[in-house]
Length: 59
View 1: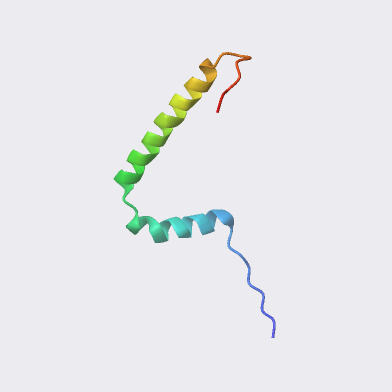
View 2: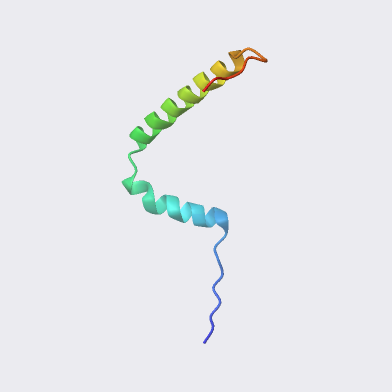
């Protein structure tokens, strides 16, 4: 016996998953972590933009 199942639209699937996990997410903690990561990303971007052209990056 063979059965076919249609997958939900990706946007609908995302909505369902987010709705299912939302009660278990510490939103304030997540917001804090995202802000920290954005700050670190900005610092890293600034550092690499200031790196002198032609200067080798030692490891």
